[in-house]
Each structure stands twice: as C-alpha cells, then as structure tokens.
Length: 118
Image (cartoon, rainbow, N blue to C red):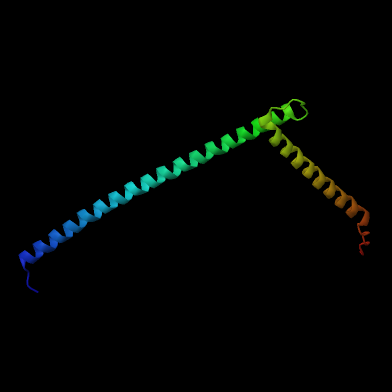
C-alpha cells in the first residue's frame, strides 16, 4: 500500500470536517432538548395553575350556593345556575336513596351462612 500524502491530507480534512459537523449537530440537538424541556416544564406549571384556579372556582361556587340556596331574592344571573344545581342535588339524593334501598334489600335477602365442617 502506497502512502499518498495528498490523499491522507484529504482524508484528515474530511474527518475533521465531519467531526466539526457532528459537534455542531450535537449542540443543536442539546439546544432542542433544552427548549423542549423548558416547554414541558412551562406546560406542567400552567396545568398546575389551571387546577388551582378550578379548585378556587369550585370553592367560589360552593360559597355562592350556600349563600343563595334558600334565599328568596336571588340575582337574575344566578337563578338558572342555582336551579340547575337544585335539580342535580335532587338527582343525587334519588340515586343515594336507590343505593340505600338496594343495600337494605341485600341485607334482607342475605343467604344464611353454612356451618363450617371441622
């Protein structure tokens, strides 16, 4: 095998250029990973704040409901929502009663325990 200095120089230059390209691609990939990681963290924080807001809204709704549940003079903007909650509360109570009836019936129909043979 004959050594050609010109050919060897070309190969070294190609390898060096490939190395520089690979390093640049790696840096670009690292930046992309960092950007995606930051975006993911921002989304997690946003979702946490949204859950916190939803919890606060639920608290506000429950406080408003307790304030106006039996009130005679309900602001017009709350009447429909208050009525919808009352209808849903009635459905919940009916479902609870149905479950209690089924449990009571199950107690009455409960099969007698068979004696265990020793």
